[in-house]
Image 1 (cartoon, helix red, strand yellow):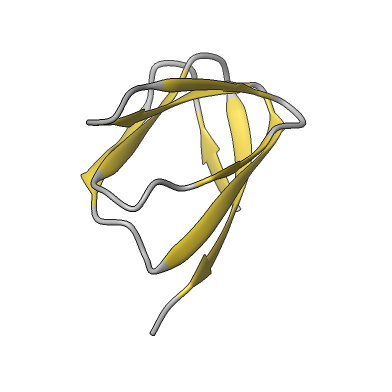
Image 2 (cartoon, helix red, strand yellow; image 1 turned 180 degrees about the horizontal axis):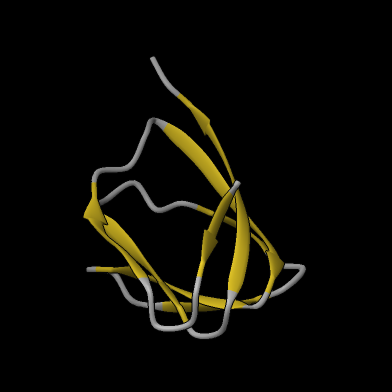
Length: 69
């Protein structure tokens, strides 16, 4: 579980082999070279297999589920 205040961000980082992001509260923007995606509360979204970041557009809480080697 990750909580971010509005305007806070997780800097660009590498993706695990498989992962998804469930937005529990607020709205976030998933940023990646292939394009940005705005994710409101209730959205379940796969993490792209490329470097990516996360920006809180509102105070937000997300659940990250990841599979590592």
